[in-house]
Image (cartoon, rainbow, N blue to C red; front, side, top):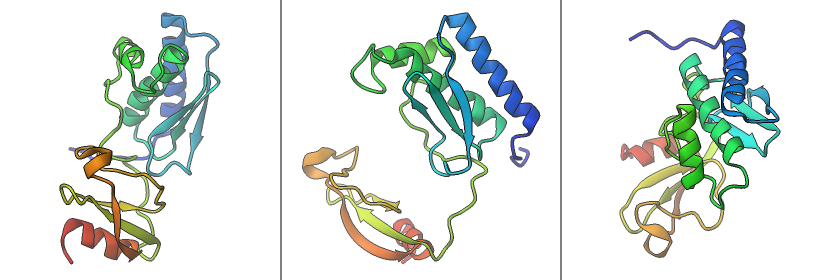
Length: 172
């Protein structure tokens, strides 16, 4: 398998052409604007209402196409369902050729690693013991598998990113 390489301007143009083709083929109007963001290092992309799709500049070409289809499904299903990844979104995702999953298990393939000295927090689920590394800790986070009753995440460690990652992997 070949090493991923940065998306080229030609590949970005092909993703933009894909957006136009999908909007025309499926009657999605108005076509949302497409932006590339170097700030999206963990998220693949984001849809902002019906007007804007922002993709991570750290995606490889395959990830960019798949993420565009996922985010365009959000634009198409806007106002049709109450939940971001509900039934109507899943129908649009399949129609547009996207994987009808809510999240990706990997981040942008070309994103640089965070600085090992950056401060991070290690969270742990009291129910199943899963460990998660976060830079920002929001209130009310819980483990998907255990749910909000048994899986409210507790801050277990805090410190340099590299040390918290080692803790999460069980190396510490």
